Image (cartoon, rainbow, N blue to C red; front, side):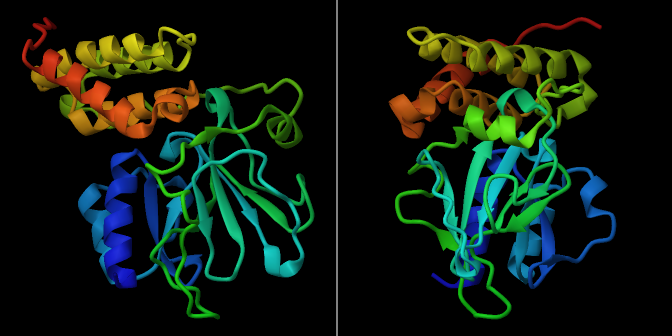
Length: 273
């Protein structure tokens, strides 16, 4: 597979997970004001991937994605304490992907959790797989066994979270409910509620909670108030945060999601203004 083919494949799959992207010149963003830009369309993300290097944006815009950048060539020795989605960089380092617990704002930082270890969250980005390192010519790729679907997206471990944030965060935010068709505030609020219900479900009821949430949101998909991709992204994020994706496997979670969505879509909800 060529780097271009890799970018198109992984950007498409990443976009469906709710991640946002930006075009790069080597490792640097090309667009002015990209840190404040709204999420691009899927077609725009794929066009950037077809043209050259892309970076995945971190923070709330990508469903509270945080990346720990370990610069091994410079002497970083930090070892990730859990298995999570991980990239082997073109420069010989590692990018460990995490979900920020509760969507709390985490700033970008350098050296807080170890020498030559950077953290990219709100307002940050990292080079995405399929892109080519401008100095080495090597392609960024997933570490074996750590690609999306092979490894879970883990919630950021609590001890690392404490190092990166104030003891009592003053401003809390949650991952966005998604891009809602027809600007339906009703659907946006419903998705926030169902997403948080799944994320907080206790062990033993996580699967049934996911199924019921997908079925309820499927009713709104069937009513054309929200698109199915937005619902999948939000509920998959919740299943990763609550540990269901890790314990049952992402394929099982996606099957349960589709089963619930199909049921709901077949019974559209009548919503009056």
